[in-house]
Length: 145
Image 1 (cartoon, rainbow, N blue to C red):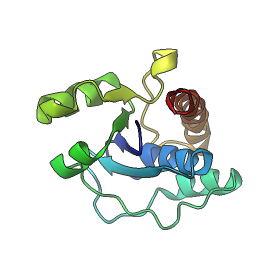
Image 2: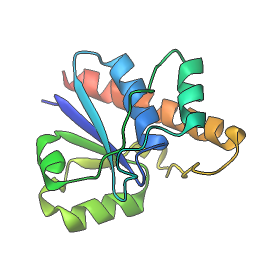
Image 3: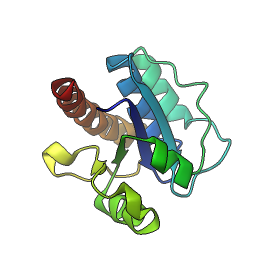
Image 4: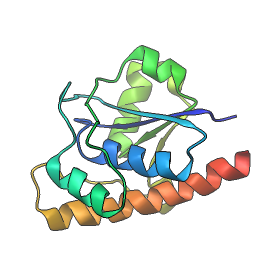
């Protein structure tokens, strides 16, 4: 049974906070968190990400970036990453996560590019991919029960 989901990207200020916010809204009965492989620890979400999420009716202004840790890896029932390289890095660093780490856009067999320091248009494109990935995972999680 999936109760706790961790979303991971690089800095934990763009993609993973957006995905975490969408997941929280879609599955309020579950626990969600996010972290970064090279997190900008203590930083809030990128202002463009905050605005895009606000436009979607989700407030991520309270988000603070945190580093991926072994404890977070062990507590999560499911870990969603943005690309294949992150998946491989987590499995190499935390071998016990094998089998519970997947790309957020796994259904589309797609990596989600990092919009950090990119234009708002690129952020919106990335948000669309994240939104689609979240939608697919919500269906999967609901079908598991």
